Image 1 (cartoon, rainbow, N blue to C red):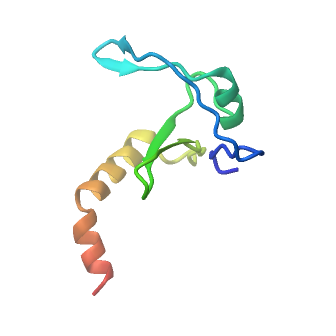
Image 2 (image 1 turned 45 degrees about the horizontal axis):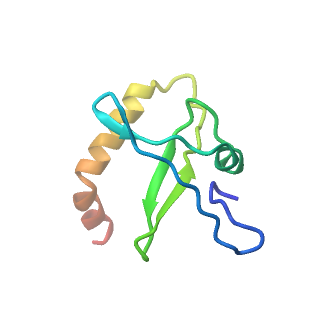
Length: 95
């Protein structure tokens, strides 16, 4: 399912939640039925992806087990550098 919830009968189901304050951020609770369909539990990470129609899609972030010799902070620093220099890296790739 790749984290995308598909409705069997193609009927749109609407869930409503109020936005609340969570520290300095805003937050909403996830309805139990959607949490079950996304297969998420407390502590899991969810991505919010905007599609071409401007709709927001929720997707569970897949957690991978790192090899024993890779520290999470090193991998995070790598991704930070990659995001900062993505344009440069894409330009090098396209040469």
